[in-house]
Length: 221
Image (cartoon, rainbow, N blue to C red; front, side):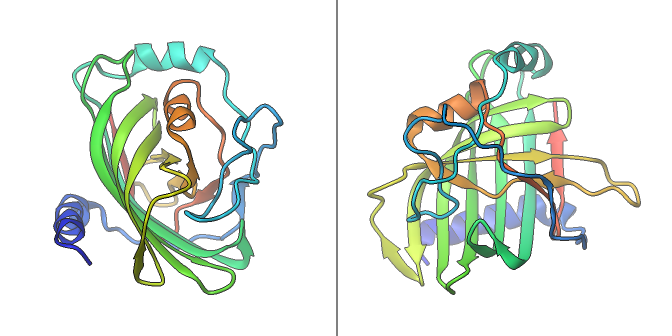
């Protein structure tokens, strides 16, 4: 692991230590994949080097206007740790875990953000992939945040690989509170290009949401 990745993990661990409440839940998705031929560039991939064959429907443009009114111009913040285990595999994944911190950095309409993320997944064929990157934009409406990031490093079976295909990733998280019986939900990360990453923050795609099985999500406006 590079010095940058180690430092990033230390930062993420410090920020997320306060929200390390582990939760157990079923593996079934709360919302299934929404398919649409309107998604450009052949769709999204659930893996850094996977085929872009999952087509995600885009959200209503009115969501962008609602987000501009709801998101704080002084800086909304979303952070957390997400973990999934799938049996049988879902979207070619046996497991996925990621940690992230995202902070709005400008006027609400701009949706610009900063932060970092680290994700590790295991495919149905036993391949391990790990990615590290920087948050580029976010959009918070109520207790839900759409986030996009730019890949900085990719490892496959602990071997660092050049970033030659998908360059960005998107995900959506929902903070459902801290009370007993409540569970947060989140999507796996999906890989595509810079254009679709920004589109996720503005108009939005609808990646499948699953109950968060490991960790906690915090959304603050």
